[in-house]
Image (cartoon, rainbow over all chains, first blue to last red; front, side):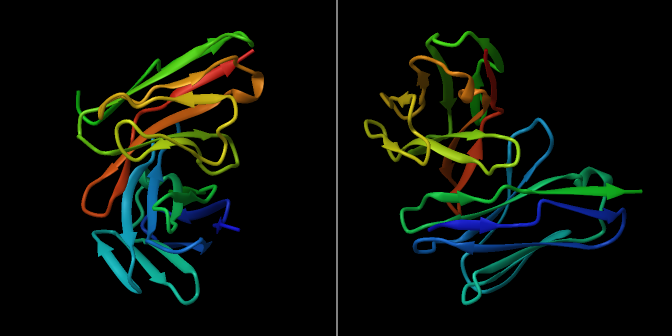
Length: 109
Length: 112
């Protein structure tokens, strides 16, 4: 079957670094996506990885290991506005996204 | 219009009523999707359309129907609403450099 696993909730301190992990099982693989979703709003695209390694985009980085079925999202210099849910999604062989339930990130001052 | 719009923003509906959720995009994306999002669960795909004139069933299609008469519009219809269809519904389209999905603002539907 297809499955995406990520922690339900994480807490971090303003200014710190946090890593949100995601493991995936998909039928075929066409990339791994991370989205940010603030409460009451729509998900917005953060990053995409299809090859192994780290993709850096400002304060956010995303890593992929295809052999391990593993990805993480790294957020640096945390700001209060980063409090949100972070959704991991794997794209299967039909180019459909399989979504995790999301990780709620709580930032404390 | 910029991106994807959905209507209504929210709706309270009596069980057994018919309801159509509207979705329009102006990005000329070929693929469009309808998801529902429930607390503690990931986004679940209801129906999708890879191009105008074609539709397909997702993970949870029962009780829902869609049509795709043109590129821009992708309405979702609940023929006879039931309380288990209470949810937040998101419409999305895909395009861009990485074929990422872009989401509308969502419709919050309550079926009583």
